[in-house]
Figure 1 (spheres, rainbow, N blue to C red):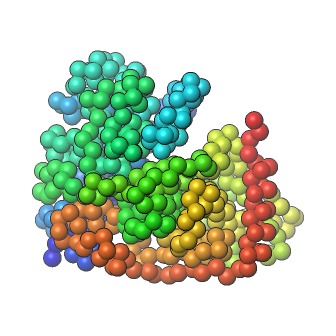
Figure 2: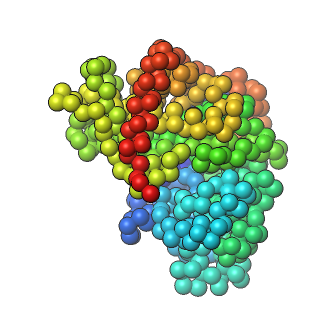
Figure 3: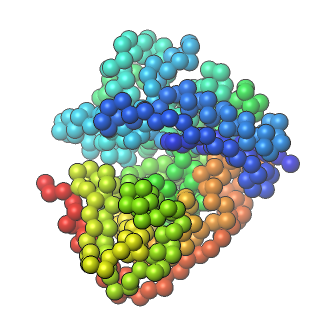
Amino acid sequence: MPYILAMDQGTTSSRAIVFDGDMKPIASAAEEFPQHFPASGWVEHDPADIWRTSLSTAKAALAKAGVERPDAIGITNQRETTIIWDRTTGKPVYNAIVWQDRRTDATCAALRKAGHEPMITDKTGLLLDPYFSATKIAWILDNVDGARVQAEAGALAFGTVDSYLIWQLTEGKAHRTDATNAARTMLYNIHTGEWDAELCALLNIPMSLLPDVRDCAAEFGHAEALGAPILGVAGDQQAATIGQACFAPGMMKSTYGTGCFALLNTGKSPVKSTNRLLTTIAYQLDGQPTYALEGSIFIAGAVVQWLRDGLGIIKEASETQALAEAADPEQQLYLVPAFTGLGAPYWDANCRGAIYGLTRNSGPAEFAKAALESVAYQTRDLVEAMRGDWADAGKTVLRVDGGMCNNDWAMQALADMLGAEVDRPKVLESTALGAAWLAGMQAGVYPDMQGFSESWALEQRFKPSQPDSWRETKYAGWKDAISRTLSKP
């Protein structure tokens, strides 16, 4: 039987999962690594930790599965995180600057003031924000002694985490990435499928730094330490979209972890957002990109962590379901979890969390219900924005994954608020499955797109159980709460 190894390198940990020939996970390993916060708003990783934990978890998962070496490897990774290293030694010139890092706020503000954002958005589909890789690259070149001189001499290489792992695994033989990761750098033209010279010049970034861009399923090099070819690569949210088999235009997946990332497949043509969503590449196969609209919610599962760690209302996340079921139906609390501002479609970094509708009888049950409902309301915000950008956005079920989708009450609340069906798959490891399928399909041991779609298995479908009048009344209350919370100009 063939075996495929999925390496899933995340923000707080590295994971590896071995899938068998039937695309079933049979063994896994995970290892956390330190986060570094050298200044307010700065978030860094030591690239050595990324490489060490990625390799050790891969070897541990293979050992648990009793597999000496896999038939192929798929890589999925935290997106936008930026690493620059020496092409000769492989040694990074600075720590990895993580996607959450905000140190380039002033750079982005200056570029925005100079009128560059429309051009950047037209080419990349992205907003001008420190979130993406481009201004992180510029910061390293401008602030690390000798980095710019080395870069201009062609001595340095840039990569998102996938590229760095490919370089390490191939012992410096391959400097490559895939289209989904390239599309998150703010240097890649998603229409022409090329690194953009104008964008690089704007930020004074030598194009010699940049990796070769390939399809998501392609030859990326041979992983010497694991004895197998790397045949699949995709950024984590795109890999989850693939793992959920969202291959038809109009299909949508939403991943509920600390935050929430929703991607809507818009087909072969990019849809320009008028509602401050991102236009991105969902995946690229056989040289043809498939595009998506993406919206991000900063606080999803993190609101449950707040109930546990901040308020002490619960000891385990699973307790929220029973509490929500026991809440007083006559009370209507609205919790706006803007602990670090609000993401799409508001993009308000300055507003802060609030709760409305408190009475003397409000207690832990009502707080738990309001916390879970806040995720449903925020998802509706994204869906409404997507419908405003693309008429077909509301004509499909929503496929969900991530830890929070194990909460039946929350998923039913989501279906009721959207007025749409919500599907939870049998295999919840959608991100790793997406990477594994890309590699396995390229290796010829997994089915093609149609076969994979047919193999996708439903665990439970949540259907709307409330009338439209209920849904619209509740959502109007949420919009009122949002209007009171947003920062004033």
